[in-house]
Amino acid sequence: MDRLVTSLKRLPGIGEKSASRLAYHLLSAEPEVARELADAILRLQLDTVVCDACFTLSDRSPCPVCANPARDRSLLCVVEEPADMAAIERSGGFKGLYHVLGGALSPIDGMGPEALRVGELEQRLQAGGIAEVVLATNPTAEGDATAHFLADRLGRSAAAARVRITRIAYGMPLGGDIEYADHVTVSRAIENRRRFGESPARRDD
Image (cartoon, rainbow, N blue to C red; front, side):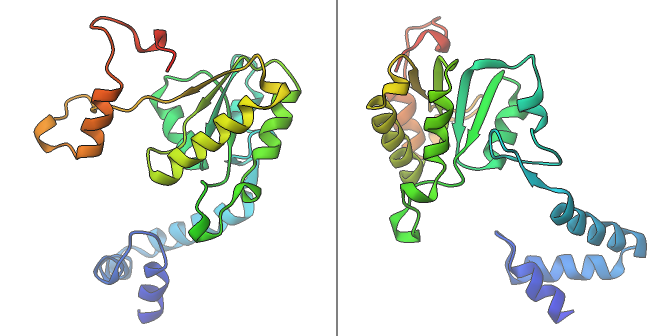
């Protein structure tokens, strides 16, 4: 039991109490549940590959998104991690391709530009056919720094001379109350305001 609790605590967001609850749940569960979980974890390691095109995680390369001929290949969305790409896909609002950086700039954690797939991004632009790059890094200090770095670097690249570089907008979530929103969310919602009735797609900033 101690071994399982210690192993579960290594997962992000899992503390001592959560790990103990999970361990006791597995102990009291049907043997098939434990076997299925163990097999799923093992298969995750054995059957997952990195897509050669966008660098997301998938069961094959190219991944289903990159291999889909219906995707708009003139649109390229840059994200930090495969989980970010999955979240955007679940929204159903983006029909282009992706580029997974593999993280965000964070000097304190040893993540400099050389640790990200920036060179591969420039190579994709050099190959041509991309009209817009959407910088969809997270709305954090590291994500913003990464977006500014990419915008500056791509802006000085000859390959991106005719490529439109955009940044995802920030604002209040649908159904949210301003009273309970954090100050950063409210501030950015004000900064990204638009004319009433205007579609967000018409904005260039």
